Length: 282
Image 1 (cartoon, helix red, strand yellow):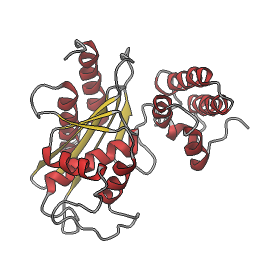
Image 2 (cartoon, helix red, strand yellow; image 1 turned 60 degrees about the vertical axis):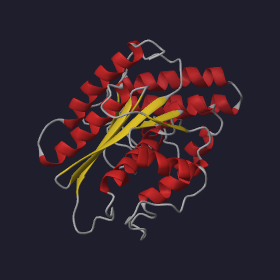
Image 3 (spheres, rainbow, N blue to C red; image 1 turned 135 degrees about the vertical axis):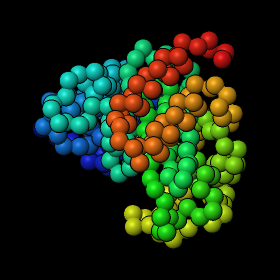
């Protein structure tokens, strides 16, 4: 039955058949391709992704790209069943927080660029990310006596924002961060110094495996072609400002009641419209 979901190992193996740009697009559809749902739109996504992988297996990359485009349209632009909950990827399997994607006439030229940021206030943290193709995510939490962060709360949160992005949306070509301290750790990990960790960070195993920064360090060390760039915070850079706002939404949502998903979606749509209308030299 073509509509049956892919196993995770099947999905991962199939990604290897695709060029890097198509693999990144397919990765954003993982929840649809590997999940079970009676929603017709989700079923259409599963069908199209499976057919795209089959086309790639036989070397027809052009057909694979067309089928992924069809899958994206089914995921983002069609009506999903009531209570489906999957329009916009509001959740990503095994990745905490809220995640989504907005659609528009985004310029496909240029590298896939992402930005991450963190926000802290009165013991409440928030992190956020955005990509130039419309994916976004956020997560907030309250610290307590079990918090393994240690003394470097802001630094660790900046790095956790990067981890959230890479786990939920895959590797961009360029990742913008406004923390020079975080950038120094990311570049050290790229050089293979994966044992370097922020002061006070608790390295004891978590319930679900290795600590997030240990996992992140290993991922960064193995991620070929991933470029980290510094951008000055609060300088008007559109993607950085969007990531900062998403982190703030995540932090505030912990203690306030409002529609974080709706607010994030509107914010990302606005920032990306401006981002893709800017002069390319900007």
